[in-house]
Image 1 (cartoon, one colour):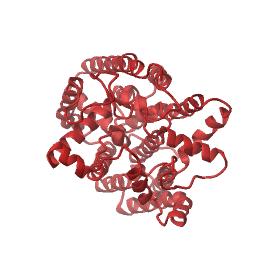
Image 2 (cartoon, rainbow, N blue to C red):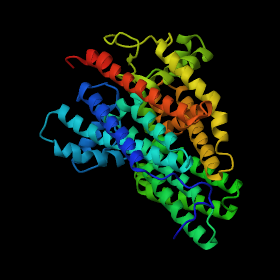
Image 3 (tube, rainbow, N blue to C red):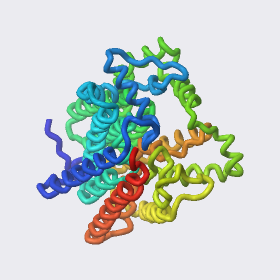
Image 4 (tube, rainbow, N blue to C red):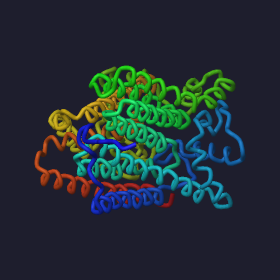
Length: 459
């Protein structure tokens, strides 16, 4: 079926040869840096950028032996309650290196995460192309920012289902954005058929999210909210929006149903949420929120510390939150009662400037109902992610920025949109993109050469 995108608002920009070249350049740079992070970070030992890497590896080993793991209190494989999809993808890398040492096996499995990370960058570009269809520079900037974010690179260079979580959420947003862009076809029958097919595809992604990690759960209400916004903006009828919600959520539940039934049979809980609490309580890293509130001097100071260090580690926190920019690389960890180094203050000011420019940046999509709906959906996903993070930190002291990564795409989109709002001239925007990219490459080189290599020397 042909679709007249001019009836939907602006058509997505054309992919020129030069744009493809720049996009693949970003992807190549990501892969080079991610492999460098993997190589300089010890493998097969405990507690590196991802403190749970060994537990994730244990899951892969169990799966490769021919069966799913079963959670046991106090076991080394405390990630056994996790859904299996990421580990299914990582298992071939483990099997291919089965006769090698633990470090070689771990680095082979890290390559799976690196490939997934590259796909996250690619999806971010094309999702932005749907949301901001006349802004190729913005799409490239969003992809480059995610690709060069040091914290994201470090996580992508480890064995973790966090990467697949981000990819599933990104694909879900892309498909929803594409549906929004297609939501104004002229032929009513064809329109409904297209919408419902796309809703079913979104449902497949929702189900795969359940099979990846519970952190993908906010994608369900995000998709529902997007359909509501499209109906409110008259791009869908109420009936079309309702049927699309039922199809997408219904397919999502059906895809995940075998896993949910297994969990219920084994643990009496379809999503194994109480097992997560048990596993978390059983780790020696766990500090409860009430204890840390007393340490930091009360609720308000506790919140300040949580968000200060979550922001810092979102940008760049390494070695399981024990290594940060501006600190001696040989020290065991920061004093969380004190603020992060000055470089994080500079980054906070840059983000504040983006927030100031965001209102103007969002105004640029006025009249484009698809973009407006998707920006609203992205805002909802960000809110859901931060609310879940805050609820978690009201129980445990866990100021890890990686818990914000399910919203890495919308956060980056708003960051770029904010700076686009501040800089109205294309030449100024291009200059800012180049300076930002160079600065982030520099941060990664500093991280690898001056922080991680000295820290892990001999590791």
